[in-house]
Length: 215
Image (cartoon, rainbow, N blue to C red; front, side):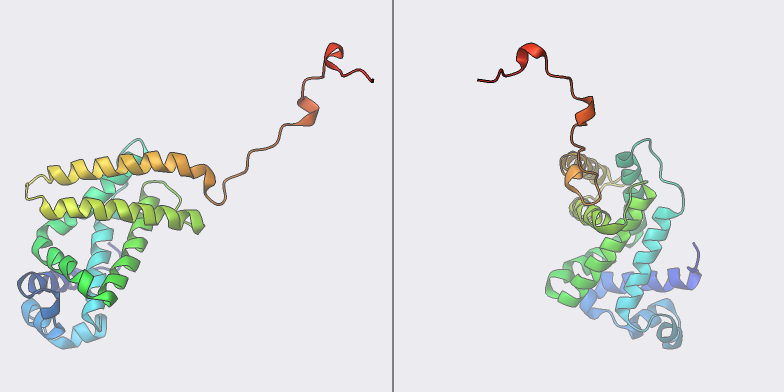
């Protein structure tokens, strides 16, 4: 995982432990430093804020999902694979992740940060699945995939099974719906070539009996 080291892992894990106990409103860099057993100095140098530290955690989650090629014969199967890898990365930090999620509705800045980061993450997941994520069409796909992710996240929040079976079922169902919708909307996306008009030179000639006789 290029650019990510053990210190990132330890400090972001400390962030999630503090959030799990105190909620997002109780997270301070001083509390994170104490939990991680380090001074504030490296947190100031590397991150600068608790929001930046949270973004680093999300980068770790993405890196774990992207570490190996996506498995599957179809784009849908590959998306399922990389998105489940993200849930597997969240699972050890479940209490903290859910505490932060509960804080989103009451914190517009955190919500905006999470939405922006989520769209970037979904663009990477699309790329991993072999689906173009560039341009306007790519942004629309990322928004659609973020909706899928959030729906599956709600299932994960209630899923206490060790194998995340309810999460997998919800994700598979939501990806199926998105796939059906994509088939309907894909021809309307920007960048799709318009249907070519019939070639006049290839039209069948009008039979003499079909010609309209002059009056």
